[in-house]
Length: 186
Image (cartoon, rainbow, N blue to C red; front, side, top):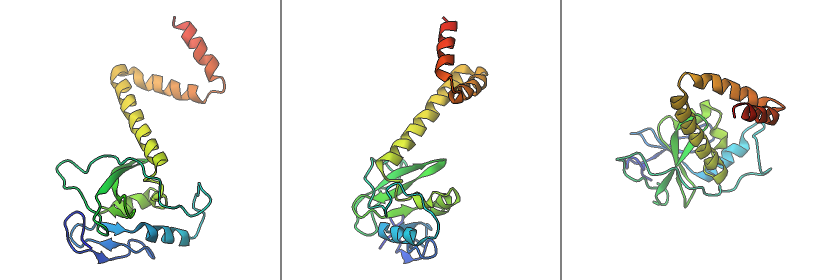
């Protein structure tokens, strides 16, 4: 097997105790087979949040988050040579993961597993490539763009309006307050 980034031969190297992976000695990336990840996850102690009540199967495929970084070469699966698709992680994580649509293997660039682990997302890997997770990532990205536009348009008033809006959203009589404000500003 060869690294999808620099074509170096991958060496067996557990990414986590009991979680087999294959590391590139040059770029420090890791290739992880989806089945190995699921077995490892099932063997972990503690309560993992399960939405389905059973071990997840291969995730329903969502549309990836787009091409690799501009100027980079398309990455191929070390196991089956299919093209890898990038999926944004979201949830405060700026990087994207590469996944094979054929065998479901996942490529993690240097430090990505540590980044997922630090945010408690390493146990959600099986969900990250699904349509629900990716829809949430897109929704959050659009929310950030919209908020940024309002911040520019409203200038110094943005913080006051934002604070009021958060208070209003949590108020038990929000709809009545909004109706009054609409009546008042006419």
